[in-house]
Length: 401
Image 1 (cartoon, helix red, strand yellow):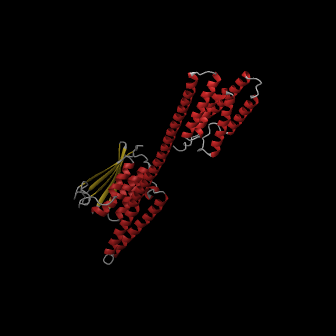
Image 2: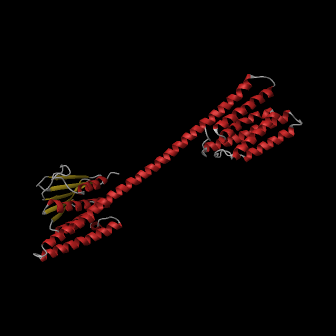
Image 3: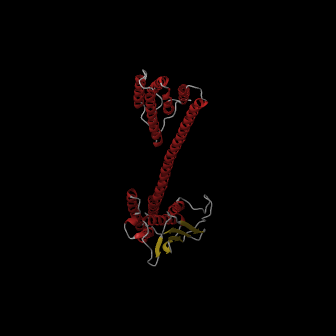
């Protein structure tokens, strides 16, 4: 069956160990007092006293009361063997010391492997029965049956406690392991969420800015020889977009906050700055704030999300819609703030399957939906081929916790 598992150092084990040690010393002292009172002046008295002192010293030198026992070692086995030998000699000289075996049951069970411990309990029980019969001077069935019953009860109680302790320890280990696995899972989910957030930030800032610069530089290249003034205007606009992109990149590295919001003025002013830049790229964009002056100071994360959505929507309009005009409308409806982005482009089919000619392209719409979902908001897209597009992003002012 192998070695008994290491017993955890719990309050219960310390309490039980202290009780067993106290019981041993009480039983030993009681047996010695009984012997001295009933057998005064006998020649064996000095031996009895010496053996009692030796047994007391051995017990004091043994494992600390209630301390967790390591796996059995030669030192522990030798110590227990000396205790049992001294006790056996003491019982042979004075049978009244037999009941000191009860605490020894516990000591053996917590020190030895199961098979060796059960063998020791059986041996101690035999000595207790023999001592009680000798002490009574006659055969008494009760004296023969009572010690084995007490030994069996004590052993069963100890083994059950040990099983409960093992189950409890296994449960604690499972809980600790589950907690570590949960923490690892949360870290992985947090990492994935952060990667997704960074991907959206890059898509809505650097990638869109680079796309605008490419389109402007391509337009300048086409008219460089025929319309140099128009080409230079495209280059200047591209330089302005590059400068803004550089500001976004620095802000992105610092704290990922939109540069337009960092300048102050709130979301409305940031939308106007965005519209002005887009209008320089020959997409006429107007901004309308419909709140009757009631729009509260929005949380930074809501302002950032709506501005990023506006940037992404205008980038889609510029690259895919072939539109001449677009509009940004910021509206307060009861406890919800709504950003509408409309254009007069060729539109698309929002229900079309991916890969079909009328299906939306790129990662813009999924990124917008992910931003709004994190805020408890919703994204609605109304469009049809040849009829332009209306995109509505709604965010509750009290986002769900």
